[in-house]
Amino acid sequence: MADRRANNESEASAVSLSRSLKPLATLGLRFVGEIVGIEILPDDYVAQHTSAQLLNRMLSTRSYISTASSQARRDQLAHDAPDLRTIRHIGEGQCGTVYAFTGTESVLKLAKEGKVEQLKEDGAIHFEVYKCFTELGASTKPEISIPRFVSWIVPKTESFWKAHHKLFPVNTPIGYGLLTTRIFPLPEPVREALFDQFAPPQYRFEPARTRELAHQKNKDCLVRIYLGRREKRTATDAFKLRNLDLMVNEMENIGLKTSLFAAIIARALAILHWGVGVNGNDVEFVLGSAP
Image (cartoon, rainbow, N blue to C red):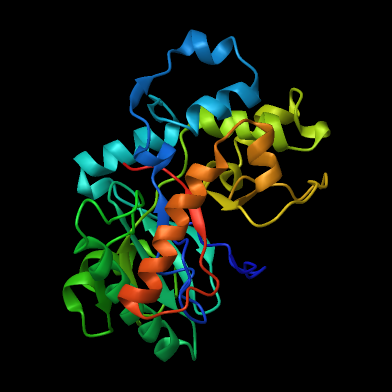
């Protein structure tokens, strides 16, 4: 996998197929991959095991983990009552700013000045990638999820802007954007286990732990897996769970079956090459969740 661009902060995306497609067309390994089966991890199990043991279990199977987080409650309220819906800034890419719509599965990447054509081009590739993967047969399709291409938004898309422009920050111009579905962040128990396993020592004890986990940068958690990179993690005050890089040596240390992930990723890359006709440069694969 190619190195990620250092300035990409978008949780809305995980695959780049051209200059900035990484923030647009996503190949997200669904939470725990739909690989092994379904199991429920009770609260007492979570309380009795180390962070490494929890991550081994929760990232190796299709586990269902209930969450009563404040964000989940807000999303449910917004889903049930459209008048309560808001938008939230969740990242920046080279050619756009990404906003999530609470209570929905949608995100909008709003083009930056001078980047409309680049974003439009990336959106077109996103559409082709999504189309190709959805048309694959069950025996061929890898166990990944690609956010659905919804629409290319323009200033004349009156239905969209009439309903949503008031939700954006003041002085946000009506412009061009790419509307897609979203890869949701990992559930709270997984985030806490990741934090306890990988955060710098100064953050792992109270009250610092609770304070840091409450930051939005640690709630918007997608995990980017790198099977071709071995690195020792350096403790830094800039640590965050948003777009957390997980190296192959770290996956091995918590007992994940890297060969299983490698097989899924290899199949996806082959489909990108033979089915879509793109080289897959700068492709990223992430662990996230479904709503």
